[in-house]
Every structure is written in structure tokens, then in C-alpha cells.
Amino acid sequence: MALDSPVTPVSTTVPERRIGVAGIVFVVVAASAPLTVAAGGVPQSLGITGILGIPLLYLLTAVVLALFSAGYAAMSRHITGAGAFYAYTAHGLGRVPGVGAAFVALLSYNAMQIGIAGLFGATTSEFIDARTGVEIPWWVLVLACAAVVGALGYRRVDVGVRVLAVLLVLEFGTVLVFDIGQFTHAPEGVSTAPLTWGAATDGSLGVALCCVFAAYMGFESAALYSEECRDPRRTVARATYIAVGLIGVFYAATAWAMVTGAGTGRANRIAAEQGPGMMFSLGDASPGTVFSDFAQFFLITSLLAALLSFHNAVARYVRSLGREGVLPRRLGVLHRRHSSPHRGSLLQTAVTVIVICVFALAGRDPVADVFTWLTNLGALGVILLLFATSASVVAYFARRPELGEPLWHRLIAPVLSGAALAVIFWLALTNFSVQLGVSSANPLRWILPGLILVAAGVGVGWGAWLRVGRPGIYAGVGDGVGAGTGSGAGSGAGSEREKGDVGG
Image (cartoon, rainbow, N blue to C red):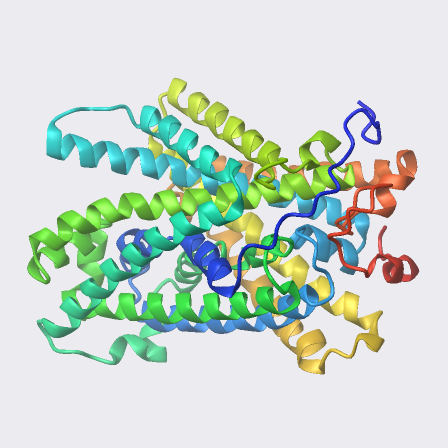
């Protein structure tokens, strides 16, 4: 199909600017699923690494992401379309790499969303079975959840934000009650040992950094809502900083509370033995069994919130790419009444249903296979995109000194974050088999990362073809404007980029 065909014109309707800083923060933090991290991520980090200083690693990771956010926020002040990684890479490194980044983003966010769906199905099935004796296949629950998430994603953005706000408040409240209970009933007293450098480096540091970094997935999604938030030049930056700080402090405090509740001498062993059950067993002791029952229910709502957040991210990427003609233009049309990227939402729902059905028909495990394989694949892709974005910030502002961004935002912070992200990516890649829970000889350790390379290669190849075969579409890549439409949600930086389109 000719992607510049006028059969279905791109909607010239700009999304309504319905959400502010708080709404964006709700969306961003929901993607990281605080209760899921508390119940699963923290025990995993403690158990498989033997490191007691996980709380400090959460704080150090927040520092790295704060450095990244400095350049990311600076870009958001000049590129206000909803393309995020895709748009920033296109403006910084060139249109062809930008299309490659877009395809990696689509793969990564879909993988995260579908992987979390597997955990949702397993957790919900176990919860219902334990309380009613009714056994419901995990995939049935996932398909039902996909319908709910799809319906919310189809509607206007503030509907989903309200749902996320309620779910997130319940999550935070649950974890705060748990944290207070552990600090006030510590068997060995409250120790600062988990916050020391020695405790943070005594064990498998590379694996620990990978586990900790995965807990922040989704923090970067604020820019995807640039066209739907009030005052995007400020809102995206503020929301990103607040989200990173909030997530970092909250996760560090929860990890510290968990170590304190178990005792510094036993925390790693208990985590290795009990896994996700660690939070609930500690919760049975303090605050009590009633808390644990509520916490297990809110774990399900935590996963639902994360699913909605990643679903919305995919829908907005699809809409941005469709509007510009990189994907079929029909995908770039907004809903007439809801002003939502409804076709991107429907596409993401369809992809989820297809992939889940494939795993179910193959008899794969929803946690060991669906969740573990796909979320690790998604996290690896996002880390690569973060690195590419840091490089894009440096390249973009190097060609535009007249924009007047401080040296810290345009060079120092992105260089520091880029270096740190390169190290984290290498550690994640070399420890990928550990993350998957397979032997180093298992082909999955290179098949899954290879999918990222395939997505990038297909995207780069498609971008190169657009440059030759569809120059009109190619000229608008990353600008947030459909060729010949003037829908104008982009950046105003497109003409400036013409004089320095590296690699494109």
C-alpha cells in the first residue's frame, strides 16, 4: 500500500490538552507498578544477587536517570510532539536512525505490556482459586483484562488517568502500610547497613543493577503525552523529574523496610527461598494477615495499572508514526469524539490477544515464560533507547547552540547518563541468561536480544527506503506532522533539522 495515499486523510484534530503534571506523574509511575516491584522486584534482587545494599542501588539508579532526565527535559522544551524516543532520535541522530528507534520502541513496549499481562493472568488465577476454589485458566483472565484495558485506552486520556490515579493511590497506601509495619517491628532493629557502599557491592553487582533498573521501566513515557498535557514545555520536564525522584525514594525505602523486617542477617536467604511470597509473609507478621489479603488484591490492580500505562504508550507511538506516514496513515487518525489514538489502541489490543493465544496454545508458563521472557526483552530495548536518546540530546544541541540550553542540560548530564546507560546495557546483555533463569548455553539468551537487532534493522531499512521512495513522508519524520496536513503538534524544529540531519 502506498503510505502517502490520500484514501484516508490524517486527522487534523490535535488531542485535547486535558492533563497536567499530576496526571502525567500518575501515568508514568503506574507503568513502573510500585506494588509489583515491592512484591516481586525487591525480593528477586535480594535473592538472586546476595546483595544486601539493594536500597542504595535504587537510589544510585535514580541518580543516573535524573542525569538522563536533564537532557530529556531539555529536548521536551523544543520537540513537543508525542514521538518521544522516536522523535528525539530523529532530530538528534537523523531520520533513518529515528525510524529504527521507533520500531525498537514498538517492540519493547509491546513486550513489556504483554509480559506483564502474563503475570496478571497467573496472579489473578491463583488469587481466585485460593479464595473460591474456582480454577480459571490464566489466558482467559488475560483476554478479559485486554478487553478492559483496550476499552479504557480507546476513550479519552483523562478517563484512563482517573483510573490510574485511584489504583496508584491504593498501591502507594498498601506499600506505605507495609513499610511502616517493618520498621516498627524490626527483629534486629533498624540498621543503616543496607545503605552502605560495601553492602551494595558485595555480590553479583551486574545482575543487581539489571534487576533494579528494570523497576524504573516507564519513567520516560511522559513525553508521549506532550500533545495531551497543558503547557508541554514545562509539564513533561516536571513530571519526569518528580516521577524519578518519587520512584527512587519509594523503592529504596521499601527495599530497606523489607531488609529490616526480615533482618539483615536473613534477608537474602528469605528472599531466595520465598521470592514474591516474602512481602506477604512479612506482612502476615506485621501489619497482619488482613493486610496481606488486601495487598494480594492490590497487586492485581497494580498490574492492571501498569498494563494500561504501557498500552497507552504503544497506542501513542502508533498514532505518531501513522500521522507521519511511517506506518499506514489510517493509524494516525484520532477518534472524533474521544480525541484518542483509538486505532493504535485497537492494534495493541489485537497484538496482545494474538501473542497470548500463541503462548497459551503452546502450553507455556505465564510467569516463567511470558512474563520473564517478554519483560526482560522489553527492558533491554528500553535501555538501548535511553542510551540513543542521550546521544541524540548531545547531537541535537551541538547543532543548535542558539537555543541557549545550559551546558549541564545539553552536554554534561547526557554524556554522563549515556556512559552509565552503556555500562548498564552491557551488564544486562552479558547477564541476560541469569535474568531469564536459563543456562548460558540456552539459545534464548541471544534469540531475544536478537529481536531488538531485527526491529532496529527493519526500522533503519524502512527509513532508508522512505528517503528514496517517499521523500515527502521522509521529510516529516519525527516532526509530529503528517505530510501535507499541517496538523501541527510537532516541534517547530523541523526546518532547523534540515541543515544537520546526521545519518538521514
